[in-house]
Length: 275
Length: 307
Image (cartoon, rainbow over all chains, first blue to last red; front, side, top):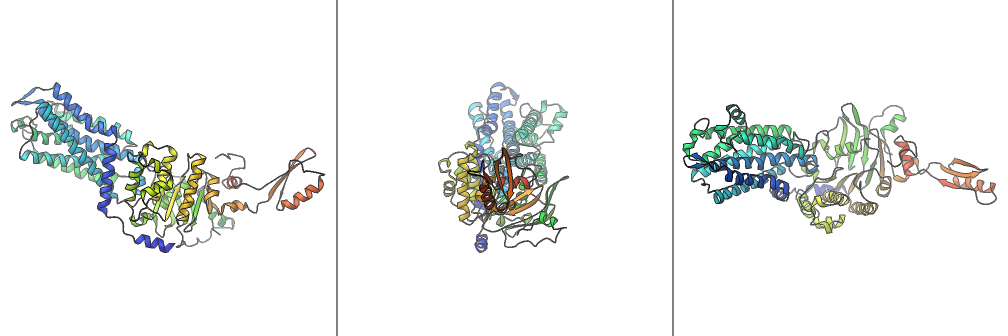
């Protein structure tokens, strides 16, 4: 008996890359089969774009409509939904219902859990951006970015999604379960959307609210994406009079570092009360 | 045979602890776990042999789940030594975890995946997994292979938990109250599943509230009360049950009478000689597993017997 057990212990663990693929498939199925998460994360921003595009179609000057301005903001908000809100709620749910504890009792490498989550966020982010762009172009005649603007689009989206994913993972540890995570992050995300230049022009937001918004990633993601969707003349409307792409990268990068530190310090595989 | 700390106290003062048993599947010495002021596990010793089914019995709050979860590597400990398959669970490695199967009391969580998808994912973490479809067959969920985890009934879900626990082909399987919420038919099916796993050489540590379950499945039973293991025995000998005096009751002169005797056969013969025909209301009984269990955990027989 002990000999067979020892022999079995000699059998090599499965290659990590295979476990990563397996976890990625699990996370994609979990997301896309759950109606609430699909509606909340994918359908809601599209509805916002449809409604705002139809109602607030005024001219900002330089021949640019508010819908063109809103495009940058709603993509930024969509990314926050796909990353921060999605991670905070799904991980809090999986912690409270025992999924995380179950996984930590298996030989799955812990990194595989996070790789699966990152693949999920990437897939949802790409999808939400593509759907919003498609609706914008076909329904509201949005001008697509051109040339090097695409490069800016990609790095702002990726850096923003990374910062928000890490923050979402960190925030999940503060909540008791998925419902309390949702109650915690949804209002915060909504308020940030109002003061970060998503639903209104950022220049119309009171200065003190601008200051608060500047502490969080959403404002910088929206600003970075505005540089992609708006002509450079409109940079004059920004608080600094330029797009401040260097500062966008810096703030989002700092949030990545802070989010990572918070994750490492707070992540738990089990509910509180057991150790 | 197994030296419990309670027994050591009876003999007067603590004895030097026996060394850990390196050949055992699980070996625990002097385990202590506190939550604030509450001592959940208080100097527990335990040895589980390879290949056996060991049932841990005890009331809620006695320390069963805490002990099991320390062995599984989920919880830390405040004192004592623990070896599970020769490894200290506090130093768990992936290779060690690959030899365990764990069925948690709380189950494996909700999922949008189907039973088959869940088992395939689980199998992908292990070096030498069982075939997911064979495992579904083994737990009787073949018809539910394409059903999503969250659509299953309570009993089906618990069988899915067991399936997830055994798909990695564990040498040691932990089952924490696996049949809670089962109907009697489902429990019988589950018992035969556990027996077939034993025939495949799997060692099992089972916690349960059901005495009949322990009696039906376990090679040995340990009773845990107030954080200590108060006795370990084969089910038929628990609490000195096999050698306990029999209770003979009958009615004589209109009065119900009871006599405890180590030799019930001889006693009944004498009794028969005193009556012309049948002894009125004659009954001979030995303590049930429930009687000795309730006595051990500090209840009187008849009090809270449904627990």
